Image 1 (tube, rainbow, N blue to C red):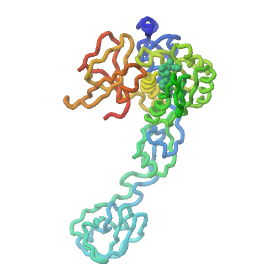
Image 2 (cartoon, rainbow, N blue to C red; image 1 turned 90 degrees about the horizontal axis):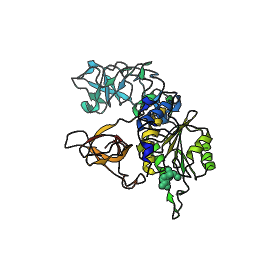
Image 3 (cartoon, rainbow, N blue to C red; image 1 turned 60 degrees about the horizontal axis):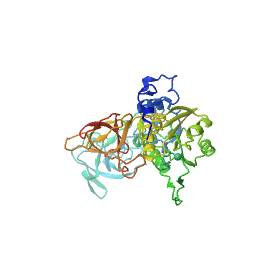
Image 4 (tube, helix red, strand yellow; image 1 turned 45 degrees about the horizontal axis):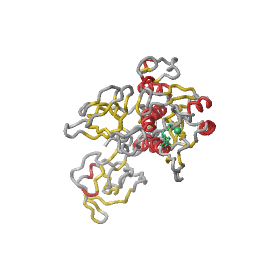
Length: 429
Ligand code: AMP
Ligand code: MG
């Protein structure tokens, strides 16, 4: 049982960030609230310096330079249809087809009077073209074609520069790069772009009880589930799969693992961060030279969460219990990763209507796994079904969760029908 006396919101528990200023970090051993903890994490998470990134890896990153058109687009007056390129004066006439202009070909001279070119979509219109008559609207007989009487000037032609002008800023610095923007940059001949990179992540699992992947666990062992989960969570937020190491519960092993990920922007450790005799992560971090910013947060699950910093590297000691590990990555590590990448740190929280009562924790904010779905009967909003696990190790009855409910501390049960904030952990349905 946790010692409730150490959790009381009196001196020693800072409820929010206004309790701190930049210089004054929480006193060692002070337990802080989840909002204060998140604010401290974000305060330390400085956007990474921009670097040149291959275009193929740029999607989702924050652009660090304006993207400027290298020439007019289209660079020539382009046919938008397969058809016939004609001047307006040829409306209603029958013309001889002098040849074809395929996409990628250019014809420098106008056709002779009484003649025209068949033109393909994407090909440059020959000089003198005022309209393109789609193939379907012209009557072709051998090498002659009858042009309809009614045609519109400029029809099915994209004039040179009508989409953008050479020198125009088409994408502003700071944009979040999308696949359409990648297409624009490729059009402008860019193979690299200046952008804020994704942070790199190292993950260290700890615990002598963990069987390595592919090994049969002994009777007192379990398989490592946090390592694969953290990898999946990293990939889900756009990071590269982390370098993942395992250390047993020895100081030297944890230290050695930390040294292996010293070049990473972010490091997460799981397990060994609490008060057990073999919880050696805090000491290993001290020896590694990391400064602990806070240790312990008034939340459930995830009370033992530790956050430290070593130079620009941010280090998170996540509890080993899988749900605590999941919540802490979702709420703190992912937020830091987004902010390092120059993106909005916090996914918005939405109000959801409870379909069943939830029991609040007396002194800690309870982040309850839940499943949200559109509230069709109410014609809008979200219904949220709490998915209570039996413990913060119980991923089995909670793995269908798509969100976390945030239940403020209190003595009362929060009844069905109440509104509580929730955040998505996967894409909304
Ligand atoms: P700890 O935080 O090290 O005290 O671990 C708390 C609980 O989480 C223990 O029951 C551990 O066996 C379990 N645990 C720790 N690490 C992992 C992991 N990587 N995968 C699954 N369970 C773990
Ligand atoms: Mg452990």
